[in-house]
Image (cartoon, rainbow, N blue to C red; front, side, top):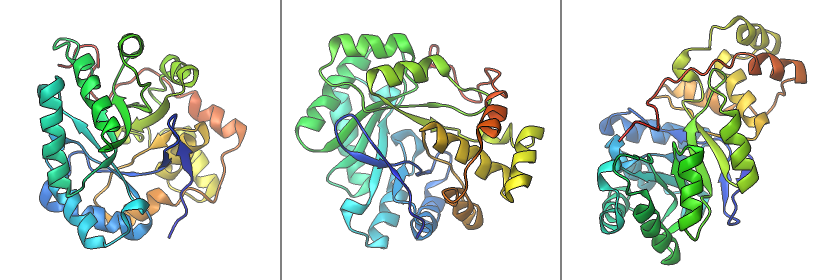
Length: 274
């Protein structure tokens, strides 16, 4: 089993720095994919209500028979379920599908500013934390104004903000705010959906280390201190993606990757997604 380092969140909970994401994996394929990931050494699994595959994750977790305290499970409340009572109901539905009495990290999936319900949603998640049903509370796709408003009205500082983050979209301002506030940065779409895998700088670094371009990008994230959740349904690639802890990028190589920033979003804009 590959040994994955952990990141200690602002409430003392530890999360594996590299986990396994199941975005866009159909439920019927999710069980096999998560099973392959657990066999490869992953212990952190990231899903969401809107993915429609929480039940598939739950089947894999049950079949694996691993101790619950070895697993770190993240799920998210969807935009249409935001609000105090509806978030509590959504959490009940998610935990039932996962087959778990608690989740390790529960996120507001998007700020959905047009709905303007994320403050009430956050109050519900704070209650779930107080009740012991959620170990760590976080957000996803929150921009600086959303975070500051949440901090002005909430009692908990989010443990995590899960954002689109990769060499072509490095989010320097947002990462700096996270560091200031003690919020861990978690990267979704860490490989930019393949958009930077063939960049000359990445290919050259990969060749130098005898690694794949994907491994170079994941190593870049790790060295920046990001939490990262690559997705794949291919067992060989699942194994490859976690095998990034036995080599190191030099300062010059890190700088070469950093030079690829061009503000490229592969996903929706958080300011307009509702």
